[in-house]
Image (cartoon, rainbow over all chains, first blue to last red; front, side):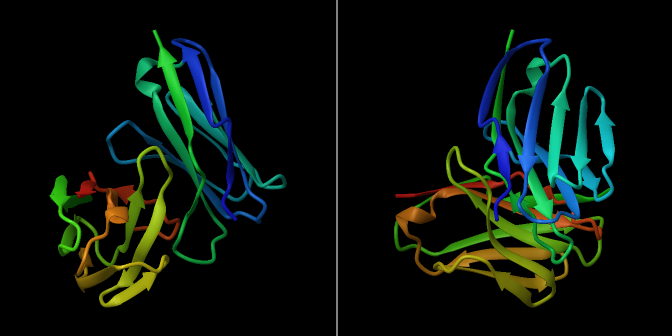
Length: 110
Length: 112
């Protein structure tokens, strides 16, 4: 039950906003967001826990809708450094694994 | 602070040769440890995870194996590499009950 990420890819101009979605068919305990730049390892961005929490990190924030089993990652006034592939990882709280989405490739152009 | 090391960074091996990749973690005790493989342009495939010394769970049947001889050391091995073993191998650790995972720099393996 891999979570579904959308869109698969998005191209933006610097300064534009982006939204990346992660949807699961299972009840979720937590959603984790990571960014991976080309040729590098994924980097942890934030975790959202069951309870409809919203979090922010500079111009990157995320929400978790527990009823819809969906999380959204918001990138505002995108910078060139935001380019990369964004992965969501989900947990139902039952074990030590994360179930990973297929990733969303974000390209920011100057 | 917590850090994770992986080596080597890149590796080119002939088909049929053995493999040993090592991962070590500093600054935390009794972490959960993970080995992932990522094919070019693809997502993260969990290979093995460990919740303690000598405790290994395998997610994908293959010619790879993993061992955890010490609390903060995780080793990925193969007796005979296949062409399909090529990829980007990532070790990760988690030190909290919320299971945030932090990745090492990875090893890019090319099997020829």
